[in-house]
Image 1 (cartoon, each protein chain N blue to C red):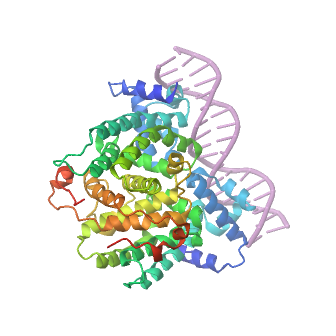
Image 2 (image 1 turned 120 degrees about the vertical axis):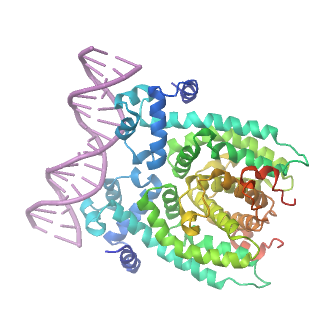
Image 3 (image 1 turned 60 degrees about the vertical axis):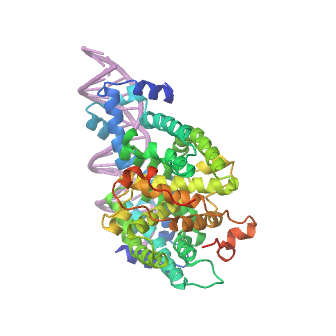
Length: 237
Length: 237
DNA sequence: GTCTATAGCTGGATAGAC
DNA sequence: GTCTATCCAGCTATAGAC
């Protein structure tokens, strides 16, 4: 069965307590908590109340299970992103277009609608994983919608060179993934005043920060600048 | 032996080819490439040309080896950060103080002086890992210098409320870690025009982006705003 | 489709010679 | 300090009864 077929089959399972669904839920939770290599199938099946054979019957292997966990959430997230993007437009009664686009990109994956903090942390783990299998999962599901957002951002920032735009998009992914991963450092430093697991608060602070970053002047192009920007690139204060 | 003692002992090993050092180098490389749970001690010792007993003799366990790998790099990184911070000051012939501070924080960990991209990726992996052991490693070694940088940033941004500052510091960590992790998405999207493994280029684009983000207006404080910033928080364009 | 039982490996850790 | 040989717990995957 293909990954997409897994996703469709799963999303049609509205009962929510079938063997398949319970395995997916347990796997999502434990992969997220312990990492894919940090948890055994035995632990997953014990948590789901099934046996090891069930996993191999439904998903073929541990990696097949990971694909299914991933596909179940990612297809609706990508769809919602594009839906929200289609609704973005200039209007004096709305926030600036740039803010709308950034929010359309970030919200679907970060709020609770698609697996919430659990799936978000799993995505963060996969992003730090460089293996070919993992990387292909991310590229396969995200690159299409990313391209659409890059186009929309380019249109909203007509004076920004493509290279600068790409870098800033990359930085946006970084803030998103790191916030979702929530390593706990900022809580420790601030005595829980800042809590990245509160995705609404995270977005409220993140969107304006990123929008402002996107609006920075492009950096000068001369190659020498790349090694000595400190003495040459002075944006107006 | 304590972690600090490991670090000191290692940093005094100037020959660079002792058993200890070869194990540390191999482990750093393979932990970085495959994840701590993704590589076995057998693979590490084969790569280092030693036997499994050597690891247990010198480091006690696989986790002890991870600690030693981490401590060897992190102590000099934290020191260099503070050294660079001490040199930051207002001067018309230099870039803005804010840029200097951000660069002082980012450079030591991202450029090639302390393990380079290899150790950087390992740090990114550990950041995505939520286990108590891993988290304590990061907190233990980084929180002191982070506090000093927060103070310096607060002084450079006297009108920014502490909460906003903390969030933006958190976002800065995200861009740093994600760039170091370099999941390859931006290369794929841009046909290698942007290459996050080029740390000089990364810093050239990253520092101005972050500085601009730090300079954004603080978000309004009313709790309601956290859930509906989209209709209420409109920074000037 | 679901289960039990187990095959077949690989893992971290250690004992004990030198 | 360094090595070989080994223990045994834990893993994924499968065979085969029901």
